[in-house]
Each structure stands twice: as C-alpha cells, then as structure tokens.
Image (cartoon, rainbow, N blue to C red; front, top):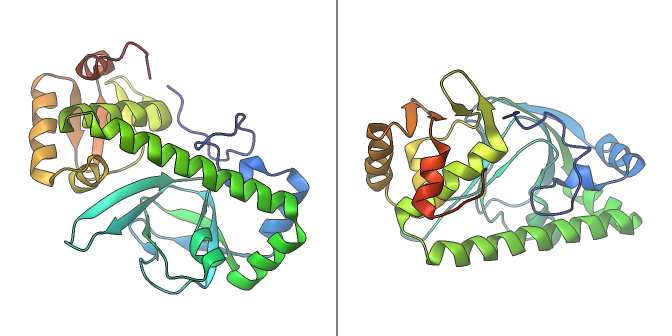
Length: 239
C-alpha cells in the first residue's frame, strides 16, 4: 500500500479526494502560488481558529492537517483531513464571515498563505479557477452529505471500521507488521470523526487489539487484518 504522494498535482478524477491544486492547469496553479508567501507550521500547531476573522487562505504543499469544529455543548468533531494540494480557509475568505472550523497541523506543514483580498481579486480575474473552486466546494458538500447518510445507518463499531478502512486506503503504508496509518490521530480525534466518546472508541480499539485486528501506539495504528474490518461492516471490497 503506497503512501499518498507528497504532491498530488497529477491526480485524476474530480471527486472530493482530488485537492484544489490538482484541479488547476499548471499556469493557473503557478500564478496562484506566486501571489502568496510560504509558511511553516510545527506538528500540532494551530493554523486557523474557529470563529476568528478571515485574513487569508492557505494552500497546503506538504504535511497533513485536521479540520475540527466545537459544538455548543463542547463536543469537538473531526470534520476532515486536508493535505498536499488542498486549500483551507476559502469559505470564510469568500463569505466574509468568521472561520467555521479550526485547522491544526498533524505533522510539520509547509503552506502558501494568500491574503484574502489578493485571493478574491485573483478569482475575479480567473473565472476558470473560480469554477474549479466551486466544483471542489460542491464535491466536498456531496461527500459530507453522503457520509452523514451512511453514518446514520451504522453503529459506532461499524463507523470506526469504515474510518479505519478509509485511512488504510488513503494514508496506509505497508510494513512488515501490517498497514501503518501515516496520519497520527489520537483516540479523541477518532472519536470526533465517528461521533462517539473517547471512552467508547478506546473500548472498541481494545477489542480490535484483542482480536489482533490492529496494533496501536501513541497516535499510531497498524491495521493487521483489514479483512476483519470489512467483515464488521459487511463490505466485500478491499480498501
């Protein structure tokens, strides 16, 4: 299982997994990157905060991030993982509203920051890029709606199995021990993704460890038996 490539410019198939920069023609991509400035963020560094005013967007070049939002009752939900080629902060930049989520680096991240006014001016002069951004937003919303519908019919155990299989496919690196997930998520972050408590996820991961389906460490998981995860959700397809 090959790890997701560092640069995703050459990906095909415009769905929600194809990042923004991969959708652009090279001249448009180069022109967009040229109006920004490079930034680096340390692992676990907060890159954008929920509810803060929008001042810029970020184009991610290297490293993975998590997008989270805190509900009124204090529950923190993991909304998405964004990595090389992705754009974050564009919604607030276009709407002029506060940021809807927090973006945190899961590892060292390299990005290009573009000031809000320069970004919106660029889109105004580049309708093709604006349409690609609209297509990305549509694909992300469709993916969110599809996942919400799927989640409603699954137990927490099944949701966790689906998430692990998804990460195997998108962030799996084959090792002698099994398939290591290259995105370092904590139990709380897994819980936020499947809509459960950390305690519930901890119990389920212990169950999977006892069955020798996974091997876990501090923010590390190796999937040893993906076939048993598929059996949990009744899926026949390999990740």
